[in-house]
Length: 149
Image (cartoon, rainbow, N blue to C red; front, side):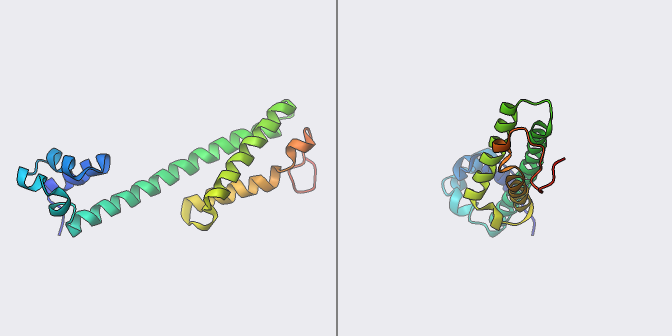
């Protein structure tokens, strides 16, 4: 069974506010329903399932956006690190940014999650290994594989 137009409107508003009473009012429910919106509307199995499905989709989309942005940021930082004309200070700063972000992922424990977040964690882990000593070498073009470029 699909959601009614009012239920869909309720879900739309609820996902913006997480306020069942206000969402019921915005969706056009009668005053008698508004008073008990949490029980009458939010308690519906169909509404709960729709909210769960939409939150899952939003979470997955946010993860994709985050990973895409992370890749661009990492790419820009790697270009600075690999640029022979970049100052040692700029290279060290770029390395620090990558290491700081990688440590943040490690603290969050994203290595254990699946999908896009796990890919981001692996990307950061690779960069951590690749550039962990770049600041100390300041000027070396070695990419961490033991062979200079």
